[in-house]
Length: 322
Image 1 (cartoon, one colour):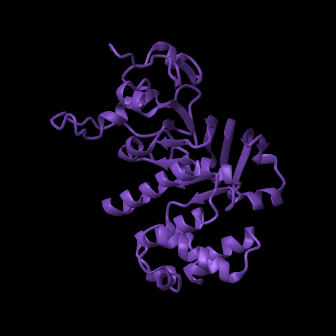
Image 2 (cartoon, one colour):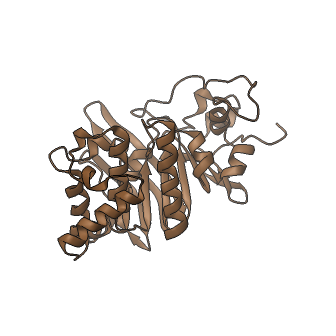
């Protein structure tokens, strides 16, 4: 359904060019939940905006392609993209309260999505809005529809944003940190709604997060991003049991585990690289405990398959007996 090939995106700033994406390769199947995980600044949100065609004017796509059902979205007609967005591909923004229009009632904002992409009459659009809010567990949808975003809590705004994304039953949903800032109960509700969409509608979900617990709960496959590149992809259980890239291993060492509560946590050493001055070699090199002379002398390692459905971009990957 979705295939990204060698995607490079940079932002022009007064200090220089920020190399946000550096050769992204990704493929997603229908009905699959693919999680992208990584530290802040890894390029996850930029990738979501590039897929949607919503990059800001300061962003430049140097090269690469984003294919959806065989059509390159980076070179598609703007009218085609307008019809696609909201109806076939939807995006849940990270900060729902900022993404919603503060001057319009939330019901009107959801109905606007319906009217832009369908020919249903206003009464039917109103009913569809009520139904989708009710399906998301909102007990009094009509009252919520008559509120402004500023009158709602962060969790309620997140559900409204989710309703806008789901009301037309998209085939591909891109969820950018959909549980950010929510309490544990609301997180569970949002994630269950996403799982139900995938299960009942055969929709594909590209879930962007930095929370490894969400990854373990939701993902079929996982892509680990670092400094604008995907450094490891695998199915979720092999990734957690047998991480290959030193960065993935370090991420898993920094979080507590229920199956080993006494295990000491190991924080990641150092800091992510300066995206204004990315090195030609592996960007994880200064933080890596497995670096070789080859890592210092070679260009950035390519993503290559070590096991079936398990690929890593590393010259000295971690082995199970290491």
